[in-house]
Image: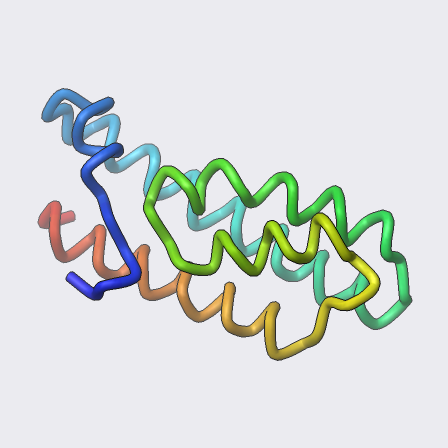
Length: 108
């Protein structure tokens, strides 16, 4: 597992329930994809308030998975006017990698 991911919390709350993990992965993939696309649009339109709210929505899942991009999301929430496309793409890349890693790790 890459160093920037830690699934120990997910494992502990799932209590070994594969259906729970599968549902979490599906929900995470769907929600993160949607939020990231909205972040890109907010960046293009300069909607800093939206950037702040969207970053806030991402934080719990990023934290639950121990993803390093949590720091980026916190930064976007605290200073939404400083968000860059590179930051959004980094979050997107890490979220996609996490989904792939979870599917591999839990044989889904």
